[in-house]
Image 1: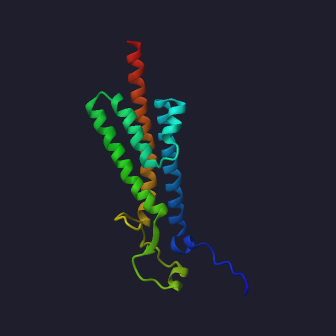
Image 2: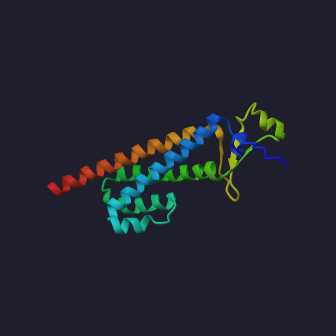
Image 3: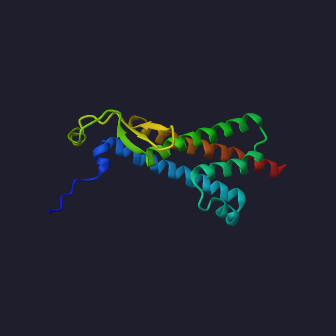
Length: 171
């Protein structure tokens, strides 16, 4: 039997643009996770912070960060906005997990030759077992942009809180 390289399964399931979107999503969500870790370590101290984030998934890190920072937010409107942001991020994490860890398939019953021809993979959807979450390949780049925007939003909250705490120390 001769060896024949048939390529990556992902290249049959997704177009180059869709693969690029999945890669962007993975990187943007990782950057957000690292940002949250750095905030936790800053709030809890290096040793305690590292223990808090060790072996935790991103959604648990969001919960830890929220628990640490919410008592610091005295303004009710700001607190509500922060809690909404955390809720939105957690919803996005579910969709990200579906995109990254889900099973990609077509909504149609395509033959192998149709997959190989890659005529139209616009209808590809990721699903996860035991989860109602699905995501279309056309939605992934938008989700990557949401993770990027939420990094900026978290930095904005952090900056506001740092300014408020530095003013409090000056009083």
